[in-house]
Image 1 (cartoon, one colour):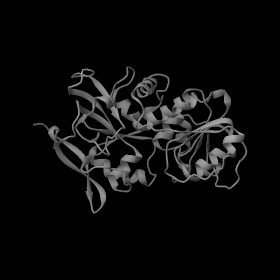
Image 2: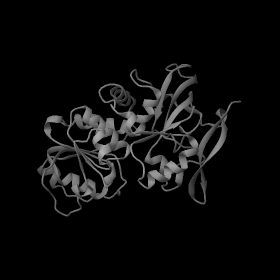
Image 3: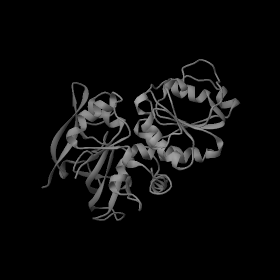
Image 4: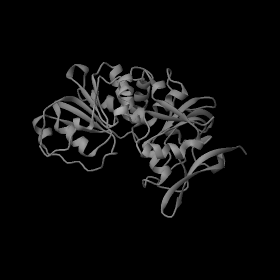
Length: 328
């Protein structure tokens, strides 16, 4: 019986608490596909589950990690065979089904995506849920009329994983990106990954006016709260916003006027439950026109032992870009 290390989430005193343990494949949740995990990644959701800062985990104990990739060891589903390189992200991984922070994964075949040609396993986790969310947001906004010639695109929470990848992808597609951050020391980094300009948080100020000056043609919101409200007020006619984060709060204060006078569209991005056909389309684009051109500049590589410290840094907004976890 093969043994491997895993970062498993337990319930202690009403809160989730993660720690390293030894496990075997037989202890993992049921699934048709067994994968030898090569890499996982760290998302904000992972930091919440691993520290108990958020009530995200729905079943204990549970191996953490909402992302994972690797090589198929065995499969009871004809769509996959031993030796296939695959990706598995989102769905119930890491919150209600054993996830990617383990040497092996056993998952439902319906959750598995073949690694697209043009991506390595490492690159797939450098992208991970964060990059997939960014790409899905771009895909959805393009279907709602977003084009480079329409004007500037604003991205807030700019040093975060989703936002950094959004900036890189958008710039590579020819968009003029305005990056909004509260971290003055990170301006050069944001310029290096494609931001045309870097603005302070006062570019999206709190306010009570129903409409402000129309500045941006589109917006990518990873913060929520007052910044999303400001973004809605300052969007151009027929502009669209992709909403995929709530680090700044879950409440949204707005009026109907931006929607009925300017035709603003607020698009929710649910990357966890994307239908498989759309999921495969987006991953194919991530290996093609949406592949971030400077992945090496936004990735930090860590081990399972470094997860607790990484989680704490992420919750304190002391990380930037993407963090990849090496499993083998």
